[in-house]
Amino acid sequence: MKNLEKDNKFFDFKGHNTSYKIEILAGLTTFLTMVYVLFLQPVAIIGANDVFVDIDGVTITRTAIFILTALVSGVATIVMGIYSNFPFALSTGMGINFLLGGMLQANQISFTSMMTVTFISGLVFVILTILGIRKYIVELIPKDIKVAIGAAIGFFLAYLGFSNSGIADFSAGIAMGDFSSPTVLLSLLGFFLIILFESKKVKGGILYSVIIITLLGIPAGITNTSISFALPDFSSVNNLVFDFKLSTIMKPMFITLLFATFFGDFFSTLGTVLGLGGRLNMLDENGNLPQIDKPFLVDSVFTVVGAMFGCTVITTFVESASGVESGGKTGFTAVVTGIFFLLALILAPLVSIIPTAATAPILIYIGYLMICDIVKIDFSSLETALGPFMTIAFTLFFADFAAGIAGGIITQVFVNLISGKGKETKIGLYILSVLLLLYFVV
Image (cartoon, rainbow, N blue to C red; front, side, top):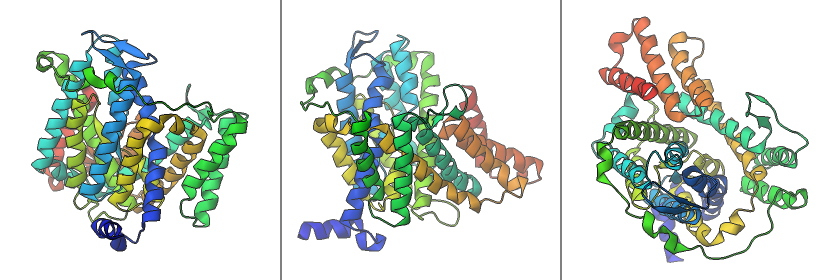
């Protein structure tokens, strides 16, 4: 009992007006929303193969990638919760993993070189965080752009929800999905269940909707019930741990890959942290998140640690919003999520039964909630609205937070120049704009 009281004080449950029940349900909700990463990361790295041998002869198995992703995600998320006291979960970022994995499968790069690029990128993150440069860049970004980041994340989450559920078909543009599909119908039911539970202020309503849709998915044939429990082969990870090759830095592609890795994760994490901070009502009057250096340091350190353990860039996940909207307000939510990641090492078959129809509606609903802050932007003025609009548009149409932030900042600087506010714009923002232009070119 005393230990529970210590945890309560450590995470400041009273100050955050929360409880163990709320935080545990929120942590489980976050885990269920982003558990897909464990099954998608192996696909990103080695495609549909169960075993892949790279150009250096290194054997990479689907099981090994799964184990390392679950392990690093679990530990990183627990550390995030304890160190920062934010309900933010971490795992391997989607995007750069497919870029590097595609090159690996095409024999353009070795697994060792992949990890070397990721490791060095992480070291740069750590240095910039310790020196306070990441925090300085956040403070440079105009307030309306920061508000737009949260809205952009909302639109992006809604897009993921519509896409994953099949409600919309983006395979050849934008079209309506197949409404005769059980997945689509149950996804819609799941969405309306979430609305019902949230309107009635049912704590854990999002989690309850996941359980209901998963159960209904059994007779509908979309919930996989043929599961068997067996411990994964932990020996398969041996040749993927501490696998570096310093000669990689001498290759022509190194700078390009480092730039893509660094900028992509830098602004993706920045956008996610600010967006989630906004939903937690923790941003100050300038749109900055107090103690933002803590989550920045955790994700940068674990990009380094992740590279040591065969993982691509580790980043803060926007799906953490599902836990936030389920009531999670402290780092205990993250600790719970992290524990479930570790449990996934032995409970993977059970986790895998949850159909996308159960989780996709969460993304749509959270998207709606995060879009609400868009009313804080004055869209009646070109000077204040165009930068935020481009932030949202680039994020949505490029499916890339980094591109969204870059597009918004560059547009805002240009608008400032042509509207006679060039002298009021900080020099650091001009320098940042030039670097961000390179992000689109390199």
